[in-house]
Each structure stands twice: as structure tokens, then as C-alpha cells.
Image (cartoon, rainbow, N blue to C red):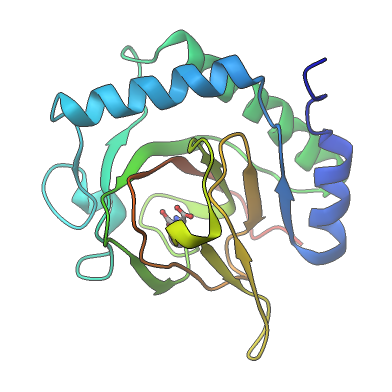
Length: 206
Ligand code: OGA
Ligand code: MN
């Protein structure tokens, strides 16, 4: 029996209690496998651009602190597996608007590949030129990731405490974009993810 999918209720519960959530099995394993294969292929076909420069840099605006390669998810180039992910995120958006009284509107996201040795220094996602980023969603695509591979997402809970998350295939991390500083520790192997943000254009959510 394949493991059952992460429940949106428990993600909402974690977000409402502490502002962040780590959920394994957000999508069926075969779809995660497709997403990983497609991301690797896009990288090999040179479709990704440096996250700190080149095309699309005006949307990331993080020059000098990141070493990943990215490709924005955009119509009409979406694959069936990417659509599955976006559909499940849409369910999450509706659940968050109802359970957390947010007014999340559109999603913007990109594939990200970090080559060995890459990092993303400590930063916060909130400020953005086109609308306000309210909820960060990071979905990992790396089968059999091991502690020794590095590449942990380090989420700072306050000035003293942090929580390290392995970028394991199928795991979705969500957090309130204006609350949590975070960084990506250097890694020893290619690290793939889909990273994105739900935005809000209305007055700041309570
Ligand atoms: C980002 C980011 C974290 C990760 O792209 O803004 O913080 O674990 N990514 O990939
Ligand atoms: Mn970030």
C-alpha cells in the first residue's frame, strides 16, 4: 500500500499553531518521480537560469546570496505533473483562506536546482515588487536524500532556535513568508525543488 497523502487539515493546524509546516507525501510518489525527471531534463537542456542573474532575475532580486538555477513555472509550458502539483496547491490555498482567514490570491513559482557546493544565504521571502508574498511553499524532489548530503533548509524559529529540514522527495514545507528567516546549507549533490509563493494584493492579512 502506498502511504496516504499528507492531510491539508494537519498542514493548516501546524500553520495556525506555529506558522510553519513540514508535510511528507504531499503528492503520489509517481508524480514526484515525473517532476524530478522533468526538472533534471530541463537542467540538462539548459532551460534554467542562474537565480541571481540573467532572465527572470528582476523577479528574484536576490543577487549575490543564492547559487541556484531556476525556471519559472508558466503557461503554456506546464507538464501534466506540474499541473497536478499546482492543483493540489490550489486546494491548499482554498483551505488556508478558509482555515487561516488569509486572502491568498495567485501563485508564482519556479523549478530550482542547486548544484553541489551551492547555497542560499539567510534571507526572508516577504518583500516583493509585484504584490505581497504571504505563504512560501517549497516542494522537494530528491529521492533518498541523506543527512550527509547537506542541503538542509534551515528555518529560524526565533533568535536562538532553528529547525533543519531535509529536502526529501515528496516533502512540502510551508511557512508564513514574513515571519521566518531561512537559508539553504551547502550540499554535496544536485538538489531539486519547486519553490513558490502565494501572494495577496489586499490589505495585510491578520
Ligand atoms: C527560496 C528558498 C529554500 C529551499 O527559494 O527563497 O528559500 O529549501 N528556498 O529551497
Ligand atoms: Mn526563501
